[in-house]
Length: 117
Image (tube, rainbow, N blue to C red; front, side):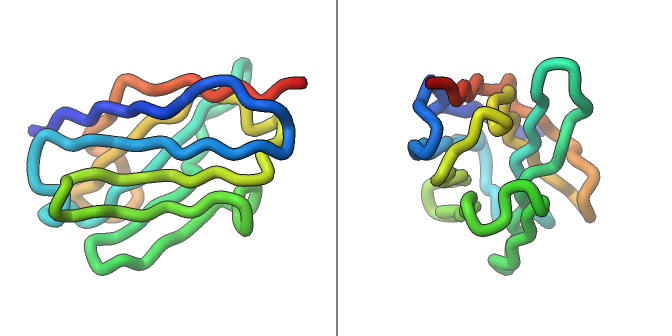
């Protein structure tokens, strides 16, 4: 078991930046990967980014080049730096922990990101 607590969400204008944080209650190095999913109103949940215990990252095409996922194993924290934000990035962002592959085994409670002028 692990508890994941997201923070850093909020409202920002298009073109702005935000950094989300996810604090885990235990060692994140033991997981195959950590990730960030997002769900926009009326849309299916989307895997935005993942980072493995070895540091390899992958991104959805919709965020590639604008978002960066990183991890601090000593602090048991995962980050999602989001730049050049667009209105279509508006969603609830969830931190996830993966025991194997891309299937998320544990979820945080989510943090709202709203991009609007």
